Image (cartoon, rainbow, N blue to C red; front, side):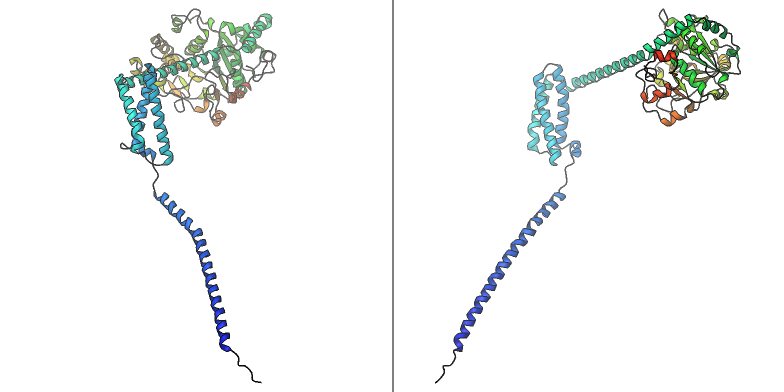
Length: 518
């Protein structure tokens, strides 16, 4: 049986067809893959490229400098700002003349100006003509309208000057009133101190032994002994005086060699005598006198008495009594004057050995700090002052002063004080106070002391350097915020109250809120 030959041709054609379909399928898959990859590439890189281009454009574009725009003479921002400033002045003038409609129209355009300038600052692009033109035009019309009503530049300047002067006058009146009220508060006697004075006066009248002791005490030879250290205090405040004495003797190396001369008025004389005779201050000697004892203190010799009402202000007299120290203590050669608002922290006996180089007054100069020179105290528009004194001369402070009484008498300093007090009878040379009179009286006769002897400002300055306070020999509570008042500066009060003996029965009964007693 004969076999049929295999059909190779038909099988080869079938293989070729299969390969074609496989190739086409691969091409289609590859094309689909390329399409997907192409879209992914555009999504990934396309937007970032765009953002990068935008960022570069924003960085390259300069930001608007609004300050330069406002200063430029060609910018609309400058024109709007100038018109707005002038419009504000016209608003005030229109209101003063009762033209509230014009004032309202100006106010509307001023707000439009402010809104446009704010948008310019936020957007960072200059103001264009289309934006500025309506506002500029309307403001110009209103300004012309105001000028037609005679609200011209001269009227504007005059009105504004009057307003400024009125505000300055009101501020000055407020300052003067505040200073006056503060002075009244500082000079007023708190009821606790009034209580203390009454209790001690009662002790004087009920205790015969105290009066006998006072009579014998007056004859003490220590009051005239020039080998001792003499201090003088002129005060009508018993509590203040006892703090000065107590703080001085507490810090003295040899308290038995200290002598205190206190001058007060008749009302407080008995209370001070009762207190200082009943308390021993480490063996020191204390003399109390009343201002009425000085027979030489009359209107013909004391010019201030001519200027005072009847009855005289004894507080003011006590303040000016410092210019008559040689008359009060004719046997003494050197004395240290202490104000009653001073607290002593160190031994003061070293002041008695200081060389004053022939000068009368030893004092701490104050022009080195925040205090003043002569022109701040005296009226240099008066030829009597300007012809004799240097306005830049350095001032100094009362409160702790060393007086050479021998040099004082030789220079006849008291007569100089009387001359200047008479020249200032109408307050034309200085307003008030003892310091201006002292600057004139001791001009050319004052020896500067080391500033550590005397630190000022604790009665008004809240920022006195702690290091200065620690190193100071004497702290001065000058100012209205005295340490015995409620308005005292709290951070400094303890420096004063530590020398008040609250265990004393009189103090305990009157100063019942110790140590915050007043």
